[in-house]
Amino acid sequence: MTAEQIQPIAPSKRIAIIDMLRGWALLGVVLMNYSDIFWIGRPYDPKYNPDMLTNILQYSGSFLFAAKSWTMLSLLFGYGFAVLIRNVANKGINPVKFFTIRMFWLFVIAFVNCMFWWGDILKDYALMGLILLFFYKMKPKPAFILCIVLFLALPAIAPLVNKMPYNGEERFNKLLPLYHSHNIIDNFKFNLVGTYEREVKMPAYAITVHLTMLLCFLLGYSAQRINFFENLAGHKKYLKRVFWYTLVLTILLTVFFITGQKLKWTYYRYINLRYPAILIMMLFTVSALGWLYINGKLKAFFRSLENIGKMTLTNYMVQNIILFFVFGGVGLNLGNTMPYWFYLAFPLGIYIIQVYFSKWWLSRYNYGIVEWIWRQLSYNKRLPLRKS
Image (cartoon, rainbow, N blue to C red):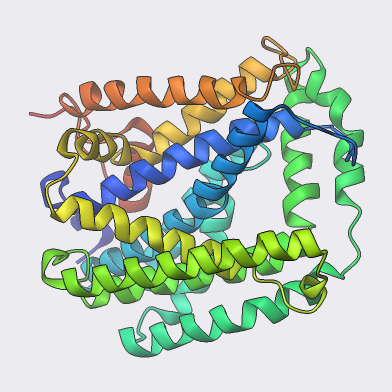
């Protein structure tokens, strides 16, 4: 059997909870990406004193979404990897070759996306997806144990990585004239070089973020291997345990961070709990949404999330293209000139429009347009876009 003879998973066989979680994560992604524009080019000012509304919005966004969204999407990427690898292997196709080709095309898509947004995450999924191939035969228990090892190692690794020399932020700020240029080539250059300076060269991103991503991949992989999401109702007692444990840990860590800030503790020089805290809060969100979902709560809300989650890749890139033309020099050139609330209200409006658009689109077509292109490149065959 050749790659041309295999098919992607039919839309009717998708796991609804997975698409719903993708939809929720995408909300956090668009809110945090757009709010980053507020800080672009702003030097650190210890005297900066935001008003009460800005404070509330900043802390709420940070608590609910900052880094929880991409870690959640990473968990779901690991889940999708396990499904795809099993589907391909069962049909006699070399899974390593197939997935390598798939990641190559994802990297091409990521390069295009990087032209519009310097904070692209797709390139990281393409890179770490190849690393994940080393674990594709691993059983769920050792994969989960490796997750725990990484979780325990991260607090010690992060401080060491943060001590590595890095001047990318200064170099990034020197690129800002390109960002405000009315030449689209300059704008593209800003985003591509900015990605290199602030992400590829940054040790904290290149090492700590990617280790965290690998942890999430393996966690999602393990969950799929035991059919956790496929039989979520059957795993309800474990879901509830995760909810309560992570809730308690979230409260304790929040109190710890606030106390440490007030008393000016310097523990972070030797042990950094940021990413463990992020992972705990992400799992709290997943378990809370999952518990509500299997209890039949907020059905209309979850259906909306499911629709936009089926087109995550398309909607993500559209969000970045809009950002490019609204805030960059070739468009309205708003940059960081607006009040902070605007950088949350505007993307929220975009997200709501995308919810309704996704529902309309999926009533007529099988895939989002970028998903359709990526699937055709991955499977090397023509796939029907319009529904029969």
